[in-house]
Image (tube, rainbow, N blue to C red):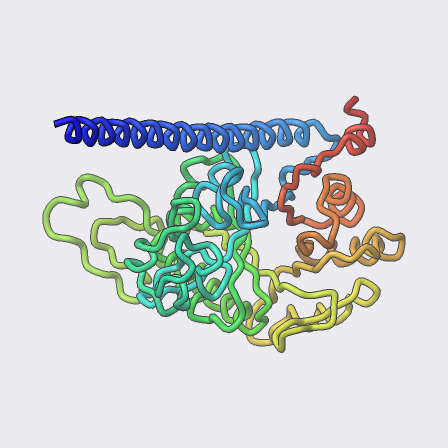
Length: 388
């Protein structure tokens, strides 16, 4: 009997120990979650304060700043900021007052445009060793992508979802879309999306790529779509009367299926600008076009096409020489003829409001990419602009 009592006491002590361990683990997890939530709240608070400060600058910087892949952590973390190219990254940026965000798109196996920078999702996936994360985006269906989870717990969004969010947030919320080289099918899919959703076209400020051939192809397809809208009309939401009875017939030559929609004829639809990405260093890939600020003359021939209208401009890689007297003169001359954007390498090129403001006000560029680092508006910048 005494042996049985001793065993019961030991079992009770084990249960108590397990309860204490479970309670300790729960408290540990809870404290970690509190820290993560506080970090995210602090980061969003910083973003709102930064945008408020930028809006006080003597030049309209917000209309030209482009949040690279949305408001995200460039080092792939998700404990402070949303994951890159996620819906939260764009909604956080736009709702804070940023006008423009850049995104990368890829075409899925079932021809859906989804946001993705790499060939696959292994870098961002919760399980980088899963079969789905290792597959190329082009070999995945949208159903497979939806089942794939990011480290942040979210999934890669459709381009359509992001454009609709921009439309819902309103104001100046727009995207600059990058299409990776060698993906002309993505250009065609983008035109198809615009044909089906013309109300979202104005949410896309520009489309860009390193692939000159694809951009000239896109220019032709968008010009044809604009002409079709002008000739046959662009679709608008249906009236109640249009939904009753027999559906109307398709108009011969019209780009639309008229079921459940009506047409607004003679409407001028403003298409996105088409821009060509370039590099300032020796090209590493065969499709990269190299140009130096000391001689920007090759750009003219790259943008022209004898069989269609020219591209709208270029997105140049940052060079420090751009802000020297000769560079400023060359950039202003180029900006007078075309739309000009500037992108930089993370960790190598300056990413701060003074550099951005000089590129916009002195060089005349229209777009400046930024990852919005914590030092974007430094104390030196505040003194520079006389904010305190």
